[in-house]
Length: 239
Image: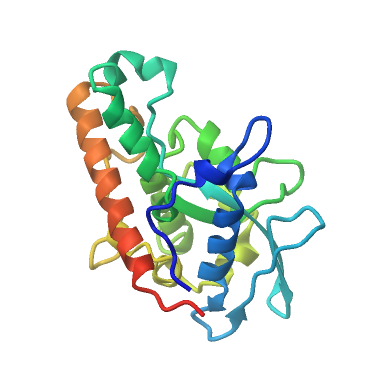
């Protein structure tokens, strides 16, 4: 099967207030097909669609996992706080950014159930002001999570949240395994350091663009990554 990397998941999300992450059947199918594959350990991570409330589900000797689909590349085009910046760009450019941000290259899966009533990974990264929903910063937190034993004093705004899902991250062995499994190579260097979309100062503010130039560069790098990941996905031979 060929994955249509240009498909905009907003177009088939149905409902009163449709959310592509929940309501696009095409996205759900693509997520299941893409991530049902061998883990770095060699074990097969088979995902199924269920009728019991989970978006995607796996149960085996590896454990039990309920995953949700998450749009991880924020455009900030609807943020009131950034309106003065966004208004400097033609609306067609803003819509073009939103469109590519709803293609498969901008989508991930994370554990979807709360632990001890606390936020999920996607919920926390959206609400945490040091992350502001950005995937490059999320990936840096994941990198630091895997390296915690080597650098336990490094700040990790998502550290406690990621730790609640230790069984999920254990599936991939290490950061390299996680990046490779989810086809994120274009967001890291050859040394598996994260490539940031904005200047990075160890999670110090700001986490969102504060001027037109910074936003323009953020948008360019975001689109560049999505296109590169889409290209990787397009090259896959999916049964």
